[in-house]
Length: 247
Image (cartoon, rainbow, N blue to C red; front, side, top):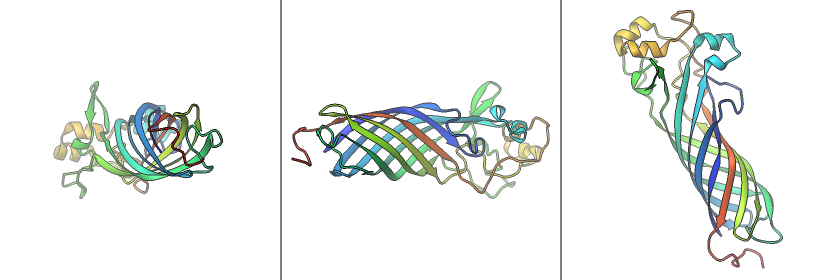
């Protein structure tokens, strides 16, 4: 009743630097999945997923975003567990129940590390405090790089041999942070004051406005960030294939 397999696909993000465009800047991702069926329509699952997300205002069609001129990239390492609900009865290798659509939902934890280029080198943004964290300019503490997520999604799976199944899945990750891209505040902090408090590199990375203004739109504090994985899986059934739900 158990399977183990590999996942391969793409990962992208929705947030302050990419509010609406699905699949934009999709990056390669890989993972492992373990699944244990407790019923022909219900399975428990655990997974490990590694990928990255990125966004760049220079690629936006919005002139406000282009002038803001921010960018970031972040690796994502996720561990998650959850449950699957099959639309149809399913069992790998069974001649009758060979395929089904499914829904999945769970709980996960992920490690992020937003970075951006400074003088041709990638620089970690969280230690800088680009929105005044750890200074008198803000009451906020540095955000954590390890965060919770709620993964949920849809998929289809089908038997291709007595032990092997092929899966396609689209999964959304609801996070509880607005700092996956290092951007939360609605406005910029005065770069002169930020430079005095957190240093000139922080001021330079916080405000990259092309018009040189120290005010304007930085982000949307009313929303949190999301990341999405879509891809395929090859699953191998463990144990004796003759031990079936159905006889």
